[in-house]
Amino acid sequence: MRSQLVMNALSLYAVQGLNYLMPLVVLPFLLRALTAVEYGTIVFAQSLMGYGLILTEFGFNFTAARDISIARDNPAEVAKIYWVTTAAKIILLLISSGILCAVILLTPRFRNEWPIFAASGMLLLGNVAFPQWYFQGLERLKDVAAVQAIAKCVVSGAVILFVRSSQDVLIAALILSLPQLIGAAAAVVMKKSLTPSQFYRPTFSDIARALSASWHLFSGNLASTLYLQTTTIVLGLVCGAQAVANFSVPSRIVSAVRGLTLPITQSVFPRFSRLFAVQRNEAWHLLRQVGKILLPAMAVIGLVIGVFAPLIIRMVAGDGYREAVPVLRIMAVLPVLVTSALMLAQLVMVNTGLSRQLSAIYMVVGVASLMALIPLIRALGTSGAAVSLVIAEACGPILMGGVIWRKRNSVGYQSDSRSA
Image 1 (cartoon, rainbow, N blue to C red):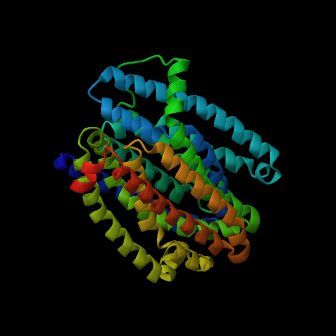
Image 2: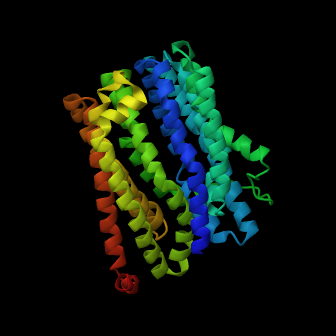
């Protein structure tokens, strides 16, 4: 078991390095080819598409991956889960696309930039076209990592070749929205099947049950969007695209750092699903081992980011983004906070029947963050948006830890608590 987990993690790291380093390599080219306002407009459009992504995913990235992991020795059941999930995601894609089109057309500020919003809409199509949750449930993570690496290399090369000036802003928006579609195409070319060998015809009752089973995670993800995507949207509406750019550059840097944890969490998620179903003591032991690796590493990296923030911003974005330096320093604590929340939410709560409580936590944190967001932005500008994000990400793991602690000390978990 350990050998397989290590191989999965190492294979992911081998290509996830490309997934997160390539955007950082390309970002300086992009920021120097486009003005801060043009770059901010692209980020603004992608943030709006984030709402559509949440609706299209609907929590299936966790629930479907978990269910496939548990049923992977039963090809018929895996096929049923796959086709029902895919049908549900296609329906949600159509609904989210219609809603977003209406919002863009009815909002003058969005309507004026509709080509960029339309290009960014490819993010939604790619989310359905590439079933990462299917690969994750089967622990075919090396396949996921390989096609993602190819996609990121293609996207990065296209940005460098085709985005040369402000006249190429629409091309940039389109290219940056294509990674998952390119990944799906790469999987087909590499003859890595995107579907099970068996087919199952979903019924409306199947789709309704799948949506019901994922509802709590969807509502939690929707609530978390209140302080993730909405932060960028509100910042852009209040302070303009320039402020969005000064917020986005540090955010992209921190996201690349946070991505260092994904190979490990993606590798162990299916194993946690199985262990919590049959061997809870082993699951708690594995959680401690994962925490000993990830949390100290993220803390050290966050410290380095805080100390060398001016140099990092100058290297990535140039002297025109000096206002992003204090934002990056504020965000330097996010890697350890987000990693803590990721472990508690995805590895523990999703797999121990605490999805309802997780949804409630996201809802509380999201609403509280949204209430504080506008006052903080008006008082501190871009830094206020970063402060709001940090507060929200700090509250999440605290509340999650409290719920898990009470669960483990309840009836039925006493033995696990003593053994851990």
